[in-house]
Amino acid sequence: MELGNRSTYSREEIWKTYPRAWSRWAPEDEQLLVEQFTAKWTIDQIAENHQRRPNAIFARLVKLNLVS
Image (tube, rainbow, N blue to C red; front, side, top):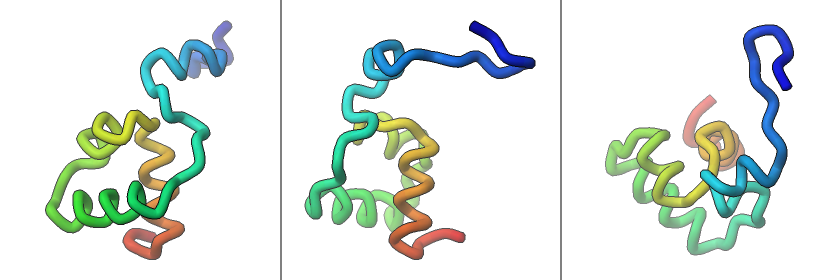
């Protein structure tokens, strides 16, 4: 299904690429995220490592006050 230039995907399709999408963040996952971000990993690298969507990584960095 396409809406304008944006494609829409089902959760099942997203889970194929990002198995941890919509999963709760464990404290150790957040700690690793902070370490990777401060080590200058890219959002895409962090997303791949955490098996989450890049926008989820960015949103968590905002929540942790690491970006605005």
